[in-house]
Length: 270
Image 1 (cartoon, helix red, strand yellow):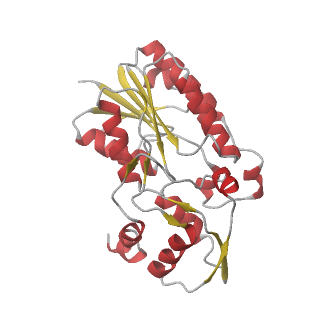
Image 2: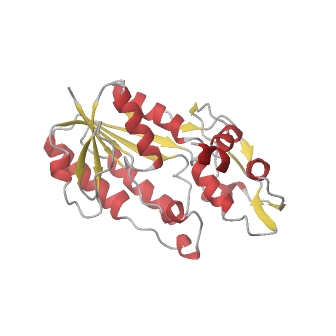
């Protein structure tokens, strides 16, 4: 049975991808710095940032789903001034290059890279790093695919929760369509095994709303009462910050439904 390596398999999107690949009956190996708890996958100890363990992780691998990334904003759930000046590249650029090099040595048949919608016009350092990594994949001699996704609901939840202490929320009026990781995972796994290659349809959420409406739905779901101060952004500035509307596949789970599923009450009941 063919073996699939998933990078980033312990993250939000990665866990959903692993669930679906296992559910489809494929053998799965997860690259991680330390083994996880689940026993229905193989674990390969390795680090994209240093290259340690990558050659062993790719042994006998047929398909790579590269979902690993290193976003300081996502990890801390908020933006700091430093994020407008630099972002680390060890995982997304150098790590991607190492992974492809070892993948070529191992005879990998398909390298699927998960990327972000709107990178070509985005100006944040993290976006430029992601674009550099994607360009390496596109220039690779490996048989490759690229799937771009919109920002995830859980990231929007983190960013909005970081405003909870403020009596007034400054929120851009720009429109975009964030998406749930479950919908992205469905699309990514389809693209990994349908025998097609190249730049695949990008994926976003089912609703295109301005960020003010997303914030109001968040406040309603979390029973918060804060004044929202709408901030107008030019289209150029909005695109530079990654606020775009995807033009490809649409997911099914709405923001309101995601908020209900991930309410504090629902999580405590689970």
